[in-house]
Image 1 (cartoon, rainbow, N blue to C red):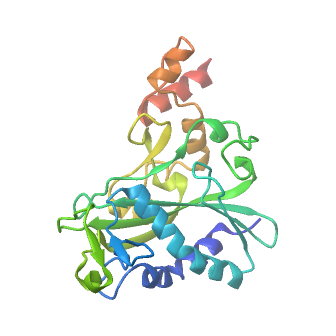
Image 2: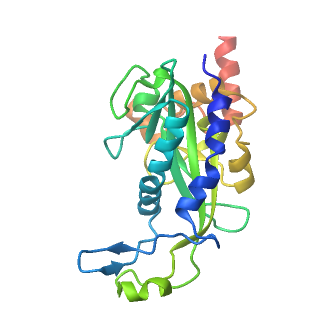
Amino acid sequence: MFEKENFRNRFLDYFEEFKKVVTTDDNEWVVKGFIDIYKNIYTISLDTKVISKIIELMLFPTVLKFASEYNYKVLPTKYQNYYPDMTFITENNEKIAVDLKSTYYKNKDTVNGFTLGSFTGYFRNRDSTKNILFPYNEYSAHYVLGVVYKRTEHDIDEYKKYTLDDLKSISSVANDFTFLLQEKYKLATDKPGSGNTKNIGSVKKIDELIKGKGPFSTRGIDVFDNYWMNYYTKDMALAIDSKPPYKNLEEYDLWVQNLKSQ
């Protein structure tokens, strides 16, 4: 069995290189905008999905360098909504999932949070290959490479066009980057992520994210898996003429006790 912590520690050693790729010496994002063939520059949206994708593209050459150093094969996802963003395959043919997630600070202690992937589909049917590169149960570990940043305090005009002469005066939309790498279950909370999508939510305190101190971190991955494989939203329960068995970990504990007593 591959030692997961070896992979994590090796990856953490590359964080300084990641930071050099993404930020300037004063921790500003090096990306100022998009450029066309006429050398016009267009500013970047504050949309976290846009920022996350650009960071992923910027980091990938360094990720390839990391993989080469430790004889890992790395397979990026081919489709936008597939899990994970990157699959590492070790010399022993073990598969490790790494999903890139980004979010922004709401204040000095709290971030907007990550969504940590679906709790339906491939997460429950772990032999399925729908929307996932390999079946979920073939992965020996599921990591989140998190990127946390501050949104610029400057006003950004997303419709303004610049030239190369303006490059130094263009404000970066993000700064003060922090990188983290933790197993998914250690970052998860007992609530879905934002919106109506059936995604697992993360803790939002920056200290808990960096240290992997979510509520499942002490309970273990088996509890995390069981919790989210049996979690139902109101709509999911209504579709089968039922009601959600629990809404949080306290109710989950009672649900487990009731099952054991039957």
